[in-house]
Length: 106
Image (cartoon, rainbow, N blue to C red; front, side):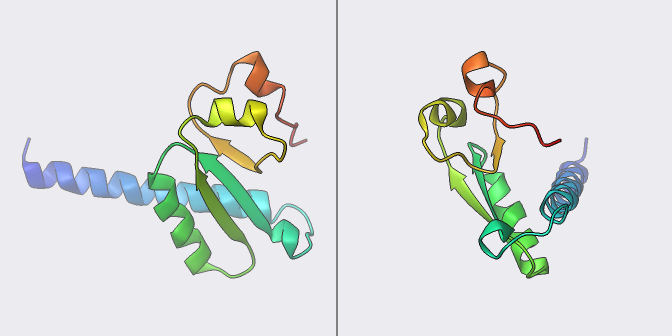
């Protein structure tokens, strides 16, 4: 394949992922009436690309804020953390020790 074509596909995928993330975050954050402190969502992730998605989200609107905290191993961190994040985006979250720390959204 042409290298330019591959770059265009990667750029389109990045834009689509960012838009889907924005829609996802907007839906989560706007689902309830929240105080100013509750309008800040903390995300733990081991994926550095989410930093740019959240920067776009924060720059496109001013109602809610997303703070990304990089964790090398979010699954291990959530097991031992006293204060839990609002969202965890990572692999290896299906283990029973990590799952026991999650709350149902419903």
